[in-house]
Length: 105
Image 1 (cartoon, rainbow, N blue to C red):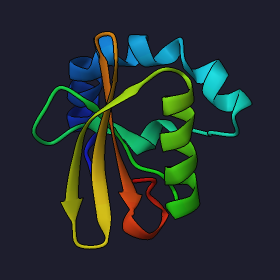
Image 2 (tube, rainbow, N blue to C red):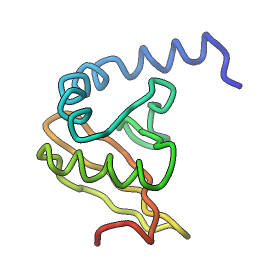
Image 3 (cartoon, rainbow, N blue to C red):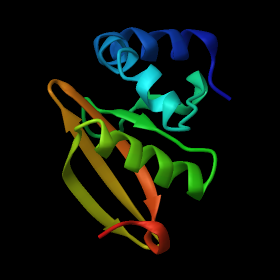
């Protein structure tokens, strides 16, 4: 389990990205996307926000929701059973893990 100080440091690192994401939240909510604060983290190898969906259907809904808001898919990495997709709009990059069986290709 993460400690409080580790999560606070992570939130500090993500602050500018979170501010950029915040303006898209109402539109995502209208599209049925629900994000919980604990599902948003720093991506492992980039400045992107990594958003972990609760299940496969939510991951696909998030992916389509971001695309409908004008985000562009800039990276799609194939892994066994899933794709790791980076979507970008302006200075905001969001990384989403979507299942291979449900990913639009």
